[in-house]
Amino acid sequence: MTSRALIFGASGQVGSALRQIAPSSMTVVAHDLDETDIRDRSAVDRAIADAQPELIINCAAFTNVDGAESRADEAMEANGIAPGIIADAAQRARVRFFHLSTDYVFDGCAHTPYRTDAVVGPLSVYGATKLEGERRVLAASPDSVVVRTAWVHSGGGANFVRTAVRFLAAGKPMRVVDDQVGTPTRALHLADVIEMAHREGPHGAAGELPEAAYVPDYAALTRPSARSKLLTGAAIAAGVAVGYAASRRSRRQP
Ligand SMILES: NC(=O)c1ccc[n+]([C@@H]2O[C@H](COP(=O)([O-])OP(=O)(O)OC[C@H]3O[C@@H](n4cnc5c(N)ncnc54)[C@H](OP(=O)(O)O)[C@@H]3O)[C@@H](O)[C@H]2O)c1
Image 1 (cartoon, rainbow, N blue to C red):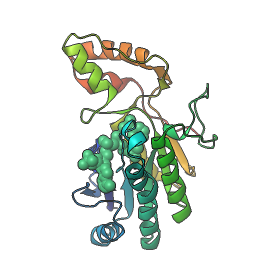
Image 2: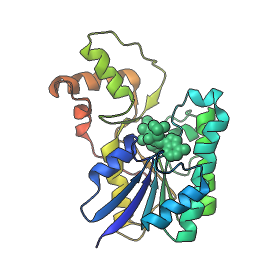
Image 3: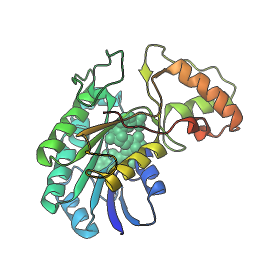
Image 4: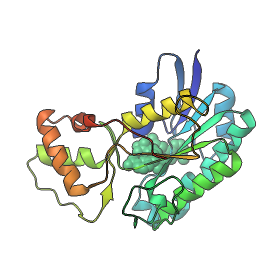
């Protein structure tokens, strides 16, 4: 059976990975900001009418976490309001909607991995805008799936792994904060999980999909330990940024 997927934000890290792993049975209609600005209701409607998808995945977002502090309105438009616009359009078109979100919706005080029903409490503007997006998505289209992920890295885009490889290749010391704990997630693994969830859920082998899936690649790592893993992997992979991430498959936590 073939299916059609419409991806917003398709040139970003996650969007590119989704395009890369799409099975041959899936036709991908890839829209980035140039094709569809997700803040524009009529553009979103038009994109869905043209693509006639069975699945919509929103990877578009204002992802500049620090920049969101001074550009809160811009961040809220893209991360908070626009996902609700897409969800509303998906609901009217009766199309399944997957929306990407983040661990920044939490306050970061937990000492164990977050469950999908953990209490939220964003500390940053970025986190607050992403949480607003989640709420609007699930209010407009309750069958939608919100996928929270963290520390996404890939061979493209700006991410911690690529920055570390650049410093290593240049033989430069790298200063990193040592009070953050995160779960580096390979964009391709995340894309696999989304594709699998679409293929198997909500009544497939994966079981009933939760409203929010939590998709980390690794057990929690501090940034310095992420870097030491990277050092090993980078040596093996002769500087190929994604080489170090091959050790563990993504997994979904309840
Ligand atoms: N990267 C991470 O570590 C991480 C962690 C947790 C969650 N997430 C979430 O995962 C999702 C994808 O992240 P990513 O890393 O793939 O982000 P990314 O690489 O920054 O890609 C985001 C894409 O969205 C596009 N975009 C921005 N505003 C738009 C708008 N108004 N309309 C349409 N497109 C727009 C961007 O285009 P331009 O480049 O032209 O602006 C870019 O191509 C986001 O929801 C993000 O919050 C990411």
